[in-house]
Length: 271
Image 1 (cartoon, rainbow, N blue to C red):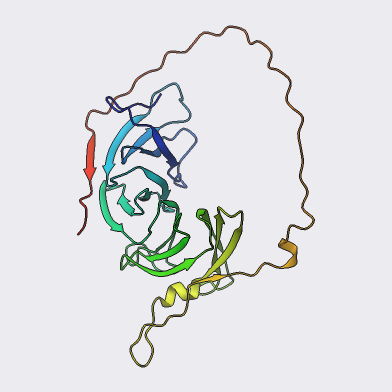
Image 2 (cartoon, rainbow, N blue to C red):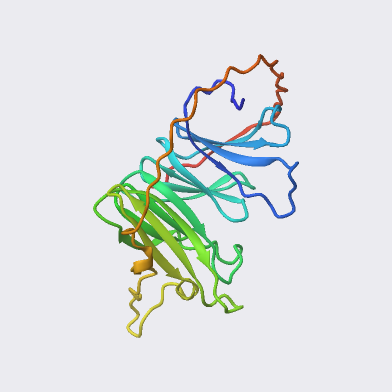
């Protein structure tokens, strides 16, 4: 059981941090857990010893209402949380501090995904972030400026989820290739978008008159016939048989581990 003394708020979302390449099956893993009271707690849990209770690491407080989604970057050093109020907070989980708050959505945030800069390290450019919301919007954020650089109206229905995956190119310098973003909406539609890596490298460019180029980063992909569902099939499964009575088993006592120094991090609201 994972429990913080005095905490009675329901759990809203759970997200495991990515494991380092050097980790083994016996390594402890960090889990981010969001609660309806607006708090986010990081827990350390070792799956190889499930009988040992997880240890609480730190508590983040940056949302006025319940967080609705969590997402880690590829290195597992930053965590982004989206809230019911439509705000996104980016946290440094190593330094255990809140970095900044992103405002722009008008409804609860439903999904967040980090997109690293194609050629620069995080220390030179913190990368990008895509987010979806029930306000029907899909947004692309530049984390170096902490501003939204493109907003797309996905459709008439609420955007209930989105995910992103990288499609590598052949250029060793990372100039080609793209990111594929898939959105799902309340109207039953799933749409596919692309973000070219070359566009992320160029960033917001100015023309000869000094105006910022309005060339879009996110472009909708028109699906070919091979992606249509005219020949889709559905399968039904028979009801499973009733479970057989199981023999009595003795319970294994849980070893409760405690964290002697817990820290609470509060990100102040920006004007």
